[in-house]
Image 1: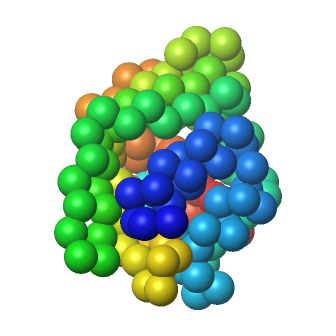
Image 2 (image 1 turned 120 degrees about the horizontal axis):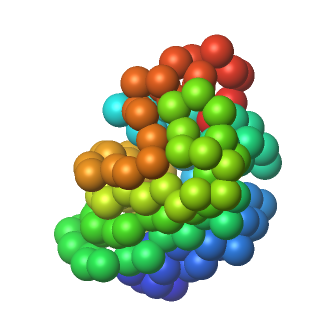
Length: 137
């Protein structure tokens, strides 16, 4: 697979909530970063605060940009809120327009960095404080 194909396979795995498949597309030391909410970890966790905050999470790719060992893509993220501090009431739709930059090594994702843009149905400062109190995101 080339880097764009790996990116699209990763998005498909995310949309299927298949963490094992997502991690299979990453290096063993792959980083997952979301600076706006303080996420900095190695690989994806099977569960955690993010999965406790929203269900039916989906990435809808809008545009893809490529370089030698990097793929960036703009996307619409949407989910159904599970409620709680910083989130819309249970059952309401939450959305974000974000950009993810993936860095590759040997055909696998070495670094996932998500930059959060416009968002509705959530307060990022409150969500960041919720995540800070947890061991995984």
